[in-house]
Length: 377
Image (cartoon, rainbow, N blue to C red):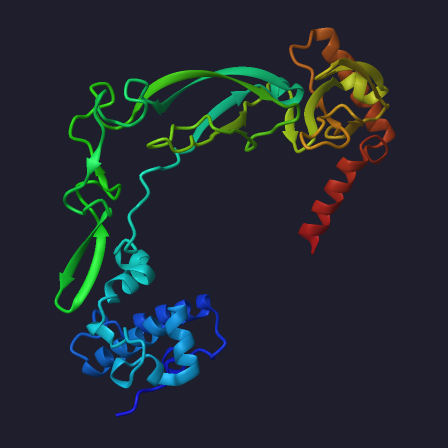
């Protein structure tokens, strides 16, 4: 029985790249995998065929021979290079582990490097609005894992060193056979490093790292806001076996302010004004982050009116012009009136009634006119 073309088996063109071939193999092998097709002999044969095709096309020398001579160039019975033949080949476990290690936990057939980068850390830093707007330097104290000075990060007792793992022979992986199916997984004794420590360091107990607290100075640039973060390179946890340290990310949070609310680069605040100031107009002092400024209130000002103070907001941390301060005036009703004050207000109210509500309170008149139309409709 003649064999199918290997490119046809994987469903790729003859000029396909190594990446495309590997991707196609992953897709086809997943489709025909025996675990997904229990008892299906046809799927099992297709799986063997897909594996055979990939073994040839993933090897540059075998692929070149196949491209030039076809099956005769790689079939040992026909004088070719050999090495194909589905499960009969000795390299199937390595090929399968390389492509499917991340799916089935095989580990890829390669030992894991014993040198590992340290983990990144995050620190939540709470700032006042003034500190966030102007910038500040802060001292922070963080717990972290640092390299053990007693063993220089090796994890082994002074004067000793780690030895090759007997279980995996220093490879970091062990092979498991399940019927005709072969898989690899991380060595349980050395955890993939290929090395074991017989005499662990008495300080770090073989970990190579110890926990310590360290104090760092963090410079906060002006204009930061909640959600911003500052990266301190190399200030995270120490790496394993001499690996580089991770980074520390300082996450910014800005506390609520008793006067101002921030929206981007603009600030907002409420300014209470008296009934007299609203009616007759006046001038009053309002706060900014830089000090007090004069705000002129025109006569007949209604509650809720916004006044913009340009340039009194925040300069963004990434640059640009300063935002504005938006002052929202709120007319405050007088309380704890004296008898004379109540009499004066009554007299004032009488004059309003003589003038007519439409003249003195246009919004009130408009509202009640709308109510009347609503009920008459």
